[in-house]
Length: 114
Image (tube, rainbow, N blue to C red):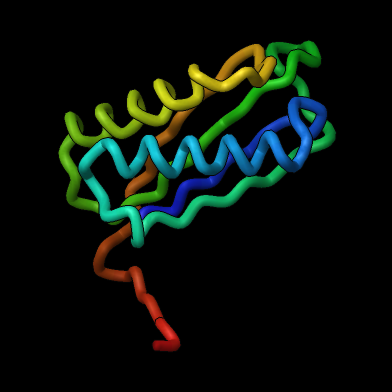
Protein backbone atom coordinates (compact mmCIF):
# COMPACT_ATOMS: atom_id res chain seq x y z
CA UNK A 1 0.00 0.00 0.00
CA UNK A 2 -0.38 2.62 -1.51
CA UNK A 3 -1.44 2.05 -5.11
CA UNK A 4 -0.26 4.89 -7.36
CA UNK A 5 -2.01 5.03 -10.74
CA UNK A 6 -0.66 7.37 -13.42
CA UNK A 7 -2.99 8.17 -16.32
CA UNK A 8 -1.42 10.08 -19.20
CA UNK A 9 -2.03 11.10 -22.80
CA UNK A 10 -0.08 8.52 -24.77
CA UNK A 11 1.59 11.07 -27.07
CA UNK A 12 3.26 12.77 -24.08
CA UNK A 13 6.07 10.29 -23.67
CA UNK A 14 7.58 7.02 -24.82
CA UNK A 15 7.87 3.90 -22.66
CA UNK A 16 11.35 4.82 -21.41
CA UNK A 17 10.17 8.26 -20.29
CA UNK A 18 7.13 6.76 -18.55
CA UNK A 19 9.39 4.26 -16.77
CA UNK A 20 11.38 7.25 -15.52
CA UNK A 21 8.19 9.00 -14.48
CA UNK A 22 7.12 5.93 -12.49
CA UNK A 23 10.52 5.81 -10.77
CA UNK A 24 10.26 9.50 -9.93
CA UNK A 25 6.76 9.12 -8.50
CA UNK A 26 7.82 6.04 -6.51
CA UNK A 27 10.78 7.99 -5.11
CA UNK A 28 8.58 10.98 -4.24
CA UNK A 29 6.11 8.78 -2.37
CA UNK A 30 8.98 7.09 -0.52
CA UNK A 31 10.54 10.43 0.41
CA UNK A 32 7.20 11.66 1.75
CA UNK A 33 7.96 9.46 4.76
CA UNK A 34 4.40 8.14 4.87
CA UNK A 35 5.02 4.68 3.37
CA UNK A 36 7.75 2.08 3.15
CA UNK A 37 9.29 1.86 -0.32
CA UNK A 38 8.66 -1.90 -0.48
CA UNK A 39 4.91 -1.34 -0.05
CA UNK A 40 4.40 1.17 -2.85
CA UNK A 41 2.81 -0.13 -6.06
CA UNK A 42 3.06 2.18 -9.06
CA UNK A 43 1.61 1.70 -12.53
CA UNK A 44 0.75 3.76 -15.61
CA UNK A 45 -2.07 3.68 -18.12
CA UNK A 46 -1.94 5.67 -21.37
CA UNK A 47 -5.08 7.09 -22.92
CA UNK A 48 -5.39 7.84 -26.61
CA UNK A 49 -8.63 9.80 -26.80
CA UNK A 50 -9.45 12.69 -24.48
CA UNK A 51 -10.41 16.32 -24.19
CA UNK A 52 -9.01 18.88 -21.81
CA UNK A 53 -11.10 22.01 -21.32
CA UNK A 54 -12.72 21.29 -24.68
CA UNK A 55 -9.34 21.11 -26.40
CA UNK A 56 -6.59 18.56 -26.87
CA UNK A 57 -3.80 19.72 -24.57
CA UNK A 58 -2.23 16.56 -23.11
CA UNK A 59 -2.31 16.05 -19.36
CA UNK A 60 -1.37 13.66 -16.56
CA UNK A 61 -3.63 12.64 -13.69
CA UNK A 62 -2.37 10.59 -10.76
CA UNK A 63 -4.48 8.72 -8.24
CA UNK A 64 -2.86 7.76 -4.96
CA UNK A 65 -5.10 5.12 -3.43
CA UNK A 66 -4.30 4.74 0.26
CA UNK A 67 -5.95 2.95 3.17
CA UNK A 68 -8.37 5.17 5.04
CA UNK A 69 -7.30 6.80 8.27
CA UNK A 70 -4.69 9.35 7.17
CA UNK A 71 -5.37 12.94 8.14
CA UNK A 72 -5.78 15.82 5.69
CA UNK A 73 -2.27 17.15 6.30
CA UNK A 74 -0.71 13.77 5.40
CA UNK A 75 -2.81 13.60 2.23
CA UNK A 76 -1.86 17.12 1.20
CA UNK A 77 1.82 16.38 1.94
CA UNK A 78 1.64 13.26 -0.26
CA UNK A 79 0.00 15.11 -3.16
CA UNK A 80 2.55 17.92 -2.96
CA UNK A 81 5.45 15.45 -2.81
CA UNK A 82 4.22 13.69 -5.96
CA UNK A 83 3.78 16.98 -7.84
CA UNK A 84 7.23 18.17 -6.75
CA UNK A 85 8.77 15.00 -8.20
CA UNK A 86 6.89 15.43 -11.46
CA UNK A 87 8.01 19.03 -11.82
CA UNK A 88 11.63 17.87 -12.25
CA UNK A 89 10.77 15.83 -15.35
CA UNK A 90 10.74 17.18 -18.88
CA UNK A 91 7.28 15.96 -19.90
CA UNK A 92 5.24 18.49 -21.89
CA UNK A 93 1.91 18.02 -20.09
CA UNK A 94 -0.33 21.08 -20.01
CA UNK A 95 -1.45 20.17 -16.50
CA UNK A 96 -0.57 17.53 -13.91
CA UNK A 97 -3.01 16.68 -11.14
CA UNK A 98 -2.92 14.39 -8.10
CA UNK A 99 -5.92 12.94 -6.30
CA UNK A 100 -5.61 11.14 -2.96
CA UNK A 101 -8.32 8.48 -2.59
CA UNK A 102 -9.17 6.66 0.63
CA UNK A 103 -9.64 2.91 0.32
CA UNK A 104 -11.86 1.43 3.01
CA UNK A 105 -9.47 -0.18 5.47
CA UNK A 106 -12.11 -2.64 6.72
CA UNK A 107 -12.84 -4.08 3.28
CA UNK A 108 -9.28 -4.06 1.88
CA UNK A 109 -7.87 -7.58 1.51
CA UNK A 110 -4.44 -8.76 0.44
CA UNK A 111 -2.91 -12.11 -0.53
CA UNK A 112 0.81 -12.68 -0.89
CA UNK A 113 2.33 -15.84 -2.29
CA UNK A 114 5.33 -15.84 0.01
